[in-house]
View 1 (cartoon, rainbow, N blue to C red):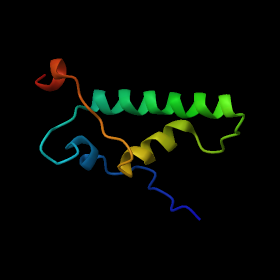
View 2 (view 1 turned 180 degrees about the vertical axis):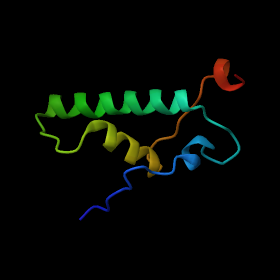
View 3 (view 1 turned 180 degrees about the horizontal axis):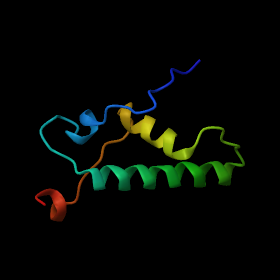
View 4 (view 1 turned 60 degrees about the vertical axis):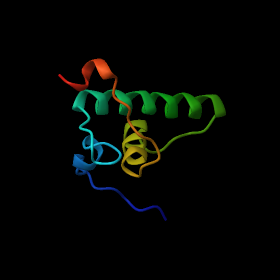
Length: 79
């Protein structure tokens, strides 16, 4: 059985970047989560799969598990 994530996970590890050397803005985290959730939802629709967990929850869990990294555009890194 899959391990359940906390309702309000600590996002500091995600916001500090993949190696802890770069700060990622909350805007980039929200945008990445939304785009990944949309992809999960679209893929499930195309495959005819019924998803029981909300796509945003799945996306955030995948980001927390390190399956994806967030690359922040240079133009907003120094804001």
